[in-house]
Amino acid sequence: MINVALPKGRLGKKVYDMFEKAGYECPAIREDNRRLIFENEEKGIRYFWVKPTDVTIYVERGAADIGIAGKDIILEYEPDVFELLDLNMGKCRMAVAALKGYHDNPERTLRVASKFPNIASNYYARENRDIDIIKLHGSIELAPLVGLSDVIVDIVETGKTLKENNLEVIETVVPISARLIANKASFRFKTGEIEAIRDALAEDVTKENLKEAPEAVKAGGEQKGGRR
Image 1 (tube, rainbow, N blue to C red):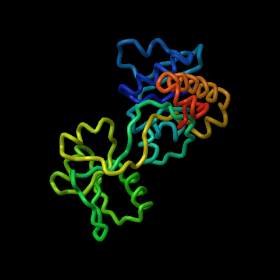
Image 2: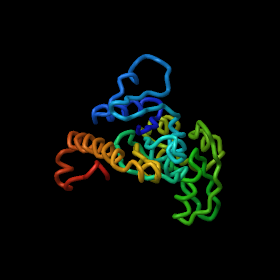
Image 3: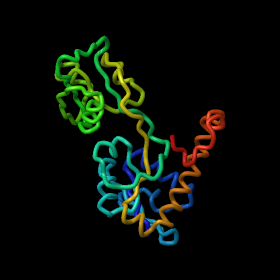
């Protein structure tokens, strides 16, 4: 059995659709129930639902052989796993945002509010900027509005929330998308099975890329596995 940690929610359902199209279906997962574990012995695969932020923990510690995690979670927690494939879904970006018209004063410590303190710290370390990290768990956009921070570092998808709160993106930190990851020991002992799953998913990713931007893909040459 290959154990797969799927993130709960909309992304997880889309990811399962990919697995199903790749030939790793498990009909029970579509039933209306509250079960957490589903398996298909014939296909040799077992799925279980976990909180998105916990996927890397299950994979790193070997409870799951493979899993799907956002690049934001991978960068923030830096798990000791193999990153096998960019699934090209759940796309957004990690960005720095501030009140419209904000101007940074490099002579003073920059106050940065974020749910992702490691990503923020690493980003500003590369910029050689002195910062004060303020870790928050929700309503990040509120921090600069009430003077708690100068800027925020957070995930931006449409930018609507920022706009409605008089904030704007001033820098992009890194693009974010869902990634297929693997436990290192599992990959060594189940290389063939895991690579077969990766390759089947990669084929689907490439097809979707061709649908979205056929001319761009042709101009840039073949993109194996949809990696960018």
